[in-house]
Length: 262
Image (tube, rainbow, N blue to C red; front, side, top):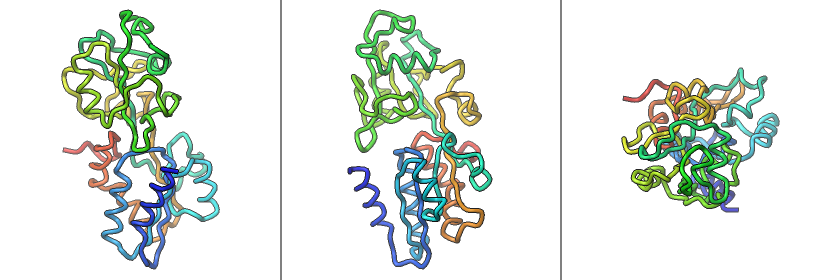
């Protein structure tokens, strides 16, 4: 219900008596602020557009798109059918990282072991070759109270025994001087020297590895439209490829398809 109210509030705020509709389905599961900010910007520049955006699961979004109910579908790469890729483009890559204090000797972990120590009741570092100390787990909570990145590790969205905080900055601040801490959350382009992001399955969470897919805890975001999108859809698709949207994505911990921002 809370998600529905959020969607309805956004839709109501963006509706106008415009001549052309832009109907967007967001099936990425992302909780970042980049998309709402982009839609508000688009509406400010084109008040003649009637803009609506709904969060849906991928199957429903694709089904409604096929029936013409949506002009653009934002979807994760794993959910995009191969026959739809010719009218889609990747606009961003999201990733999630596990961060420990530099006082913790662990530098590499498998995705399987990471899931275990994030999710196991009263997990101890000895499960991954460390001490018998309990893992102090920190995560980031979305606006609706769910653990950000839970789906990537196939976790319960209402994480057990994880201290959920409002941001990665806050979680990392707590982990800096705690060798037993483990932070799980969205990618950060820069980390303090007091912490380190773990390699997962042999790949470090660098921009290059995230973009190429070598880093396993990453997800590509695609924008799907018709072969001949209308004026409103074209304006939105152009915005997704802009430097301004790239900066909004950076704030969400996602990497755009543009060259790195200076």
